[in-house]
Image 1 (cartoon, helix red, strand yellow):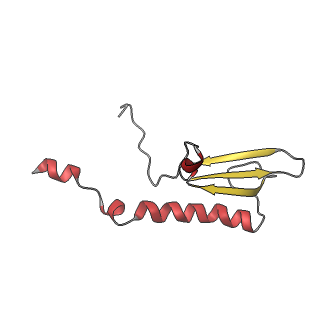
Image 2 (tube, helix red, strand yellow):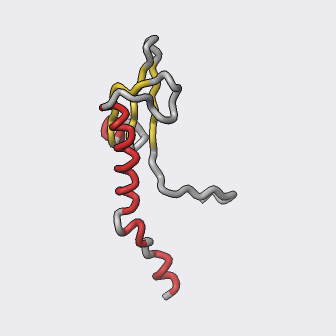
Image 3 (cartoon, helix red, strand yellow):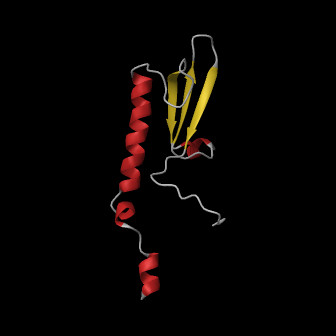
Length: 94
């Protein structure tokens, strides 16, 4: 019986918490693109010019989004985002 509880997902996951969090983070970067704003996590001179959601469909092994940005000098950057609500850091390899 104890093992049955371990197999059960938590309410956050079964209630769509991960998907809701993912779409909120994606929305922030989409707004940066639409409003021609500077992009969080990149150089202060970089502005978004393209975003792809669910990159795995373009054979990119980053699932949640890829943001393309450039500055006024023609320098380009890509931000590959794998969105997680919670990350556990431990010594275990599992």
